[in-house]
Picture: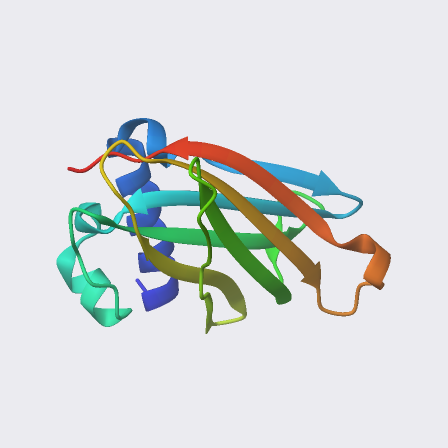
Length: 149
């Protein structure tokens, strides 16, 4: 299995095992779908984490973002200008630096962030698919309670 599909598969498997923080959040606008999930970094296979520069830690999580073009039997990952930020209930806001992972025409955006046990975090993700007009920005907001494993 290639590194990107392996990373996506590892994040998906970790998400299944990681309880509430692993829920996939999504929004749709026109032909595009924006999906986001987060998982504790120590729930990712160590070899896969090392290959992608992810430092496993109980208080560190990974945000995975996909922008998909809907069509036919399968959705296709597409490149986009993606931003992510988080804010805790005390009002402390932080940007999450995302890096594009692109292999074999498949693209996703991955970033990591630190959290406190049981911290409630509001996430805000925006994405403008490459070639899309400015008015077609996808926006996704959701709340997660973070747990240490």
